[in-house]
Image (cartoon, rainbow, N blue to C red; front, side, top):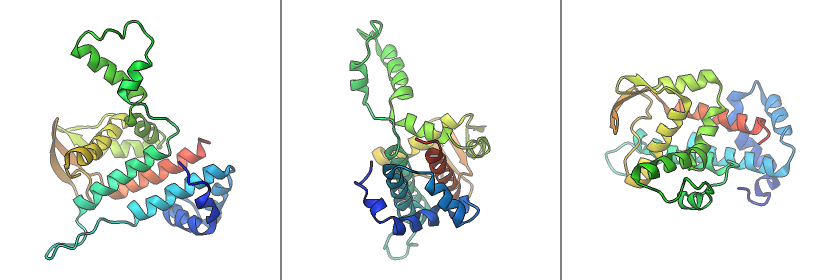
Amino acid sequence: MTFDGRFVANEREYLEDAFAVFATRFADRAAFDAFYATLRKQEVRDEFLRIASFYRFLVKEGDWRITVPGFDPVIDYLTNSYKLIAIFSLIESFSALEHEDFYEWLLHQESASVYPIQDQTALAELYLKYKESFGAIRRCVAFFDRLPSQLQQRLCDAIYIKDQPIVSIKKLAEFLYNLRSKFVHEGKLVLAVSESSNYSLGKKGVIQSTLTMTTLHEAFEVGVLEYFRSGI
């Protein structure tokens, strides 16, 4: 999504936001400017500036604050819950993959083996196939899959479920997206992202996490740069 060149029209100001976000990912300002120069289409530049600006204010330098007397204005599991929503909203927003809901996807299936759907097991299998190809989660999996292998491993090693680490970046992306969805749809706060080691109870058992929002910042920033370097 772009805003008719709005960000590029104010390029100088928004470039400062972008550099503030990505400065640690480049050797110096000249290296950052050289990267930006590779984004030759106006709509691509506009998209890059939009993502960087929104991310700076919603996540990297933004916090959900409360004004309740006797409490700290920023509580990590509150602000991190909102930041996780923002991160995944941004990931989904700049994906070139169009969304199609399950019902629409079923209507487009031409295989004779799809209809009639025999039972609940067959429906579950179709839904799994849908999620792998057209569900919102595929956008997030594609994003995390672009990360360098070392960073992928660090992310996976930060989450243990029933004393077992997450085995793949796909499972890690699904785990994080599920945390986001639990907050959005069920009002369950994100406890597994904190600046200190913590334990929480998930559907599959006890979750031991050393995953920090700082690490998610790194993953998002690196992922955004990889996305735009790929030529989208």
